[in-house]
Length: 458
Image (cartoon, rainbow, N blue to C red; front, side, top):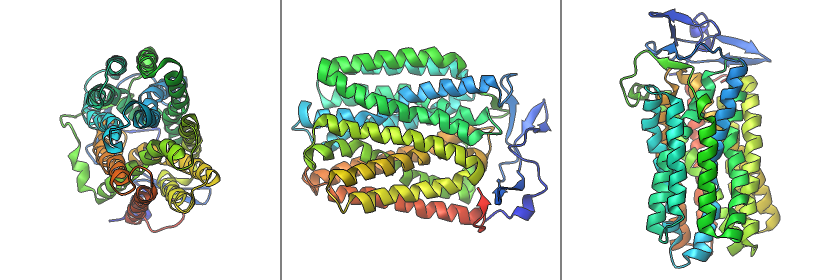
């Protein structure tokens, strides 16, 4: 059921600078206001009435310390998610050089397990972030990440790499992943979209330089030493910024591992469905374009890895641009636009053509648009469902991330193996292109459930 502007116009805001007091000096995360800005109608949403939070620090939002926190989140995401974004380089190396007799599907499960464990671990780490010091949890995650890659450097089989590079790394990365994704929105009221986009751009920056660095390390030192160097860098850098990875608000009551009450909200259910298809879309091009460049376009492996680098670079611009614009146009509006652009890139620019020029166009548009998609998802969650329990809310969303991970790369790789026989990518690309269309349909439905005003800033 949609929220009418007139019905909520006189209620206090979840994002107001002056929070409504609740017992024990807590902040009530209640309902929000509507206002006009630059001809856009600002529509915010009804959050659960019992969602209360206490200050976890005396530091104020929007201040200098808040930007230090954003930098810490940037670095944590740059290494945790950036390494996962660069897995396409390892996929290319394993597929073409180290394990040429293994199926694409089997090899892709290393990166898929990495992401899936990161997501399911995010559900638990989101709960832990509400009960324990996030700075300590981030540091523990950093150590596990480093150990995972160093241990993976000694592995000689796909199964052992799945255990170390996949499972163990994903477990460690889940802590900086959940903290870096959920903390930024708590520290800002004025420029929440831009600040969150800036923090999340760290994953794109990490994927950008990590893809090139990994390829160079593999060519010069070999895959084992490439993993050791990566593990040491990740562990050192994330440990260094952990002292500033702290939440600003913690809920008054937080006994539940996951806030299942949100599923009673139809808007949240639709949002979860859209999220599944968006995440399923995300990794396909990153994993398959490097090998597509070699197999179909007859380019070198380094050229293929450069496509991953370019996509990650454009995703940084997408995250920053959408983060800035969301404060003025509305995060949900921009999520819809960027999802439509991602579908256009795959279905219109990539599928009909097998040329270098059109692949470059696909990489540019998809990289920019998908960066905007992933950066604005936490902002939509914060604006729609409240800040107090954002870590556990995003933990619930990570269940959607998990489902999206299963729906994305494994079926794409299976299609490439069994239909395309590892040389014809057309069917796999078609599958990639249908996913954002499904997400787009659900996002439009979510918007209609909120308001039917085309000018609503939501």
